[in-house]
Each structure stands twice: as C-alpha cells, then as structure tokens.
Length: 479
Image (cartoon, rainbow, N blue to C red):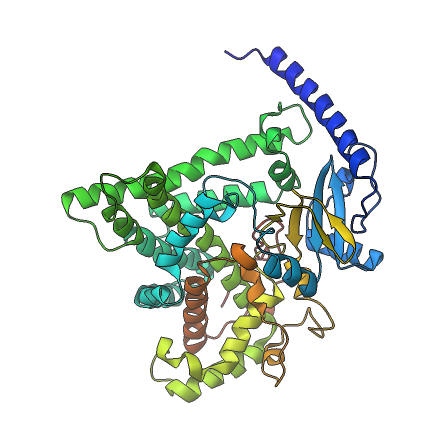
C-alpha cells in the first residue's frame, strides 16, 4: 500500500525542484528572443492565459495583437509556439519536418508516438494498408455501408446522427477486423462510442496540453488543481486499451479456427513468424486500433458539418443535386467511377473541410532541436500548435471566411487546399485517403437521394465543441 502522505510530500518536493529548474532555464535563455506573446507571470508563466475552449479564437487574437503569425507562451517553464499562418506552418512543419516531427509520446497510437525508429516502422506498416492505392480496395465496403445508411435515413431520419456513427463503425470495423456490424447497439460500436466520448472529454480540457508537456502531472493527487481531469484521463486509458484488445483477440481466435474474414488485422497476424519481434506483434494491435479510434469521430464530425451546411445554405444543396442528376439522370446512385464528373460536389466537400475543420488546432508537434524563425528563437522541446482553423479562415486568402461558399474552389486561381486539415509534414494523417473516400461517397449519395432541411424551418446554430476533435453541438434533427 502506498503511503499517500509520503507521496504528497514527494510531489511537493518535485514541484519545488521543477520551479527551480524553470528559474535556471529562464536565466540561461533570457538573452534569447522568443516570438511575441501575452505577458508572463513569475513561475507559472502564461498558465492563466491558456484558453479553456475555442483556443483558435484566442490564438488568432494574440497573433493580431502582436502583429506576428507566430506566437509564444510559457506554461510553468514549458514552451508552446502557435502557428497562425499557412506560411509559418509550411515553413516549419513541412520544410523543416526533420526536426518538427516529434509528438506527444502516447503509446496507444503511432500517430502520437515520439519521433524515432519505432514510429518510422509503425508508419511504414500503416502506409502499406492505407496508402492512396490500397485505400481504393476498400471502396466496395464503403459503398455497401453508405447504402445501408441511405436505408436507415429513409426509415428513421430523425436518428441521422446515430446512423452516421453506425456507418463509420461498419466501414472501419470491417476494414480493420473483418467484422460485420448491423445495429447501433452492436457491442463494438458501443465500445467505440465510449472511447470517443472519453477522448473528447479529456482532450477538451485545458489540462490536456499541459499533460503532454509535463507527463509527470498524471501522478498528481486529486486535490491538486486539475486533479479531476487527470482522474478522468486515468479512467479512459483502460477503456481505450480494451477497445483495441477485444476485436484483435477475436480475429486471432478466428484465424486459429479458420473462420477469419479478410481484414488488416488478419493480414498482419498471418504475416507474423516464429522470429517476429515483440514490436511487430504489438503492431498488429496498434495499426488497426489506431484506425478504429482515429477514423470514426473525425469522419462523423465532417459529415455532421455537411448536414449543418445543407440546412443553412439550401441553395448550395440544390446546385449540387442538379449536378448529380445531370450525370445520373436521377435513375441510379452515383459511385466512385463518377468522381471526376462532380466538380461542384468536390468543391462542397472542400468547403466542408475548411468551414469547420474537424481538428481546429491540428495535432501538436514538438521540435527536437533549437531553431530560429524570422529572428525568433524556438527552443527544443517546444510544443508546436498549428492553428488550422485560423489558417483556413484567413480573410485575405478566404474572403468572407465564415460563409459556406463552395464557389471559392472553382475559380481559375483557387486558394490553398483545405487538405491541411489532415495535418502537416511527417505527421499528416495516413488514413486521409480512406476518410476522404468515405466522406465523398456519403455526401454524393445523400444528396442524390434526399432533401436535407431542418424540422419546422428552425435552422440549427453554428455551435461547436472544443477539444482535439470538434463536433456540431446544435441539435440536427433532419426532415
């Protein structure tokens, strides 16, 4: 049994040592010129300035006030650098990706593993199953799930959000594990929903980023400020692990009995041999698990934004439907062979990704070496946040940025691609090809089949959650 009084004393001593370290580090680096940012307080720095929600708004305001597209804050000695322009994000996260590709250091996902040999090996393994060419093999599964969605929407349109969650679950679980789920109360769909809620709750807290920068906070007692958040983080961890372990064990058992269906997990397990390393064995869980956990909520978020946009901009919906009907004659459902025939629908999808990006602050990077950008010092270990929402709402590049306007993508010289919502450099989302196909198939088939309108002419409001993944908060009951 751990002596809590002893532990709390040790914790208090650690805080003192860390404070002294902060003071020493600041003294050593006080001659360096950091990027501008809000005024810091002694010891805690900008801890009290950190936004609890809608961080992209605060970060953009700091950028405007300082006249700099790169902003620096100091939280208890840990450095955060926010990039508020495409120019800065491209220069640092793309051109200097060799030193800006470290990440959060969470072991359950290669997407957040520290940069290094293990991360590179997992990334290569993931790429083998989800590159631009391989992802096309999943299109029949995606189309099958979309057709089920259409039937569910026809039979029960007021549960459209649950239908979207079921559809994405069907696609990802089929690809990752070969599972054929049929209902929203399927245990695997329910488990995924629990994980999504847990991760969303944890990532929406301002303490989430602090935990990334100071992982020792996970051990702080419950009475310490933010202790309730860490309690939730500790509770969510076994939920995530269970959600990954259970379907993996089922596929492994099915391979033994010869009843396994084709899936990423089955392929990876079948490729193991007696000399396989522990890391290779763990990869058979990590790769499908990351697909399962990361793909579902991001896809649903984008599709909910699409439904919201169609209720608020009915003229866009009518124009997209007319384009689809001109190709299909209204007598068949569109399929992937029609992609090149729908430039306006493609513009609608680009605008969905830009208008309310699913990850408004992207995925945090970490710089591995001291660096200098336009005369400003960026110390090694700094967390780098690309303000994606701020970048693709730049009023110079995107006039009337808050307006849903697909035509902006159809001009001779269109603005920069909204694909930055999938990330930067070596941390770009590797599942983006599959996600993009799922979004396209869903949107084009829903538009070909239904008219989307709010119940009783009561359009929902543009209310979104904060957190790593942002969701529409408004009720979206569709007639």
